[in-house]
Every structure is written in C-alpha cells, then in structure tokens.
Image 1 (cartoon, rainbow, N blue to C red):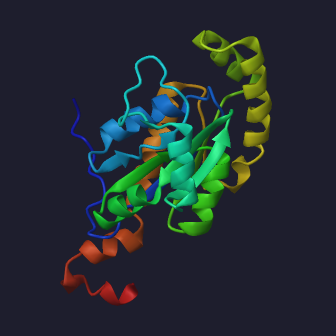
Image 2: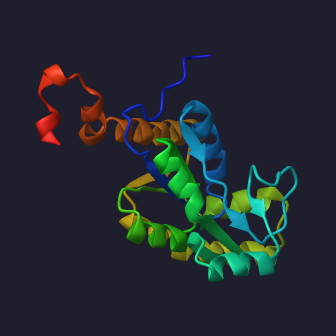
Length: 215
C-alpha cells in the first residue's frame, strides 16, 4: 500500500470539509475511502432519529437517538446544524466541531444542503463540496439498485434530488461521480490542495524564511 498522505500538520486549527449530495450519488462511499487515506481527517458522526440500516453501527455511522432525545438537544442549542430529511432528524453537535478544530484535526461532515447552509453561515473557514450524479436517470437507477426503498420513497428522493442539485452552485467544489475512482481522486485532490493553502503552511515554515510577517 502506498504511503498515506498526512493531514493537517501546520499547528493551526483543523480544516472543516462539508460534503453534500443527493441520496444515491455515492457520497458515503467516497467519504469512507477519503477518511482512510488521510490519517488526520476525522469523519464527523451525526445524530439521527432514523433507525440503523443493515451493517450500520451506533457511534460509528451515526449516533442513533430517540426523537425526544434529539428534540431536547436541538432545544438546548447543542447542534451546529440540524434538519428534517426524509422525515427524520439529523444534526451535527457543536462539541464535535469544537473538539476537532481545537485538536488540529481536519473534520469531514456529510450533511444535506440545509445543514451545509447553516454551517456556512457560522463557520466561515469551512470548505464546501457537492457530489453530483452524472444524470437523474443514473441516480434513479442507483436508488432502485439498492433494493431497500419502495417506489414511492424513490420517487420522493428523486424529487428532493432535483431541488438539492439546484443548491450546488454555491458550494466551493463540484465533483461528478460518474466514475468512482476519478471522483475519489478529485475529492482527495481538493483535500490535499486545501492543506497547502499559504495561511496553513506559513506558520510551520522556518523563521529564517522571513515569511511570518506575511500572515
């Protein structure tokens, strides 16, 4: 196996990567591979009221909580963002973002467009990435291929996808998941490039370079 790339090593607060996509675009599969590639990139674990799917583990994939517990967290202001998606609550805890940033770790959030918009308003340092399917027809084919949803649910997801795709233009980066390997490499390149921004690298350079005053 090739040597893994390093994450944030500048000593600054970690980067925040926010990834959104319509259901079925391949966001989850892409993000899982990316987290494995960058040792200092952590996958944010959201809270949700939906039941676990086959193979999902509480605390790894999501924090699965009852509706009343989720509502109490929202009322107490413990979420950086939360939203209703397909009839279920999803939320990102403020503590999750603060711990990663303070520890210098990069954090990867998989959230819907509503949540991403809220994060963008409050966390200006975030990097926002939208994963697109090659077409609506291909998206429908992927959803049907899962074999987990009824025709009615798939139709609702397709309708939602059309609206979500309309939000893609305000994201910093767009990745079309037509070929999985290429999409993975593009997402990896975005994370690598963001780690090389001058504001992140300058503090780690030798003082003899005389670049500190550039900050």
